[in-house]
Amino acid sequence: MTNILSSIVEYKTSIVRARKEKRPLSLVKEQAAEQTQGRGFVQALENQLTKRQPAIVAECKKGSPSKGIIVTNYSAETIALEYEKAGATCISVLTDEKFFHGGDRDLSSVKKIINTPVLRKDFIIDTYQVYETKAIGADCILLIVACLSDKLLDELFQVSTEIGLDVLVEVHNRTELERALRLRGPLIGINNRNLKLFETNIRNTIGLLKDIPEDRIVISESGISSRRDIEVLLENDVNCFLIGETFLRAENPGDKLRDLFPELN
Image (cartoon, rainbow, N blue to C red; front, top):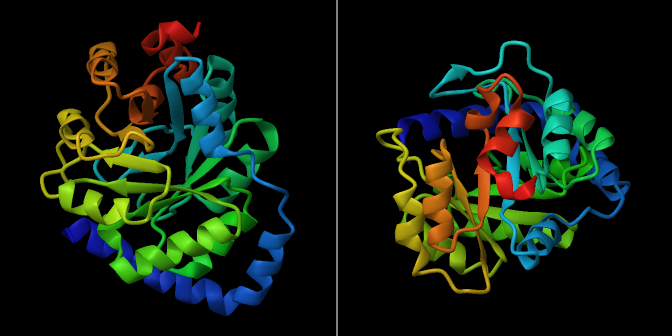
């Protein structure tokens, strides 16, 4: 695990411990059970791919560890609405507070005002967070293989599916991919960021494709910054994209989505 991931996991461990003391697991489970059936994150992607259209998971985040503050006057609700109007298939919302300047309220607020499925983007290291993810209204949860042991990865995946969450399993390299494929979930996210150098290269997605069964949906994440990047991925049969910073640095994130994906207009 890299230094930044180690720092994040250490922080998350303390946060989860504090949250358990403030709001016991039994209460979070009750709140999760009160949520209505999810909107179907995987189904939304499949529907878009069936139409032979690219599927875009458009991300809401104020900042990141590598880039600092990206959006000064940040409103997750406003950005999510712009994305939805522009044709985003799903919305991703960062809920990490310390490193990405987000929060659970961002996701809950977004879920109330849009109709598309919502992914909770965070560092999940405890089953408590799985129930919490359901309780705040997410339809899909992110599990980052680099942060988790095989035992914990399997446990988090099983609990997520049992309570009706779709699961996006994120990998960075072939070793992590082999671990992810054992779960047999339909979604694989390939992060193009090198966690040691923090550089991005979309070729990371292309290089791992041959090892992924055809029945899985592959989402390319990070480093997608131009129409040419998208065309290269499309030419290699990658049709799902998770994009945040490129949209967010534009004056209007929705307009930037339209510019990069004219086929959706």
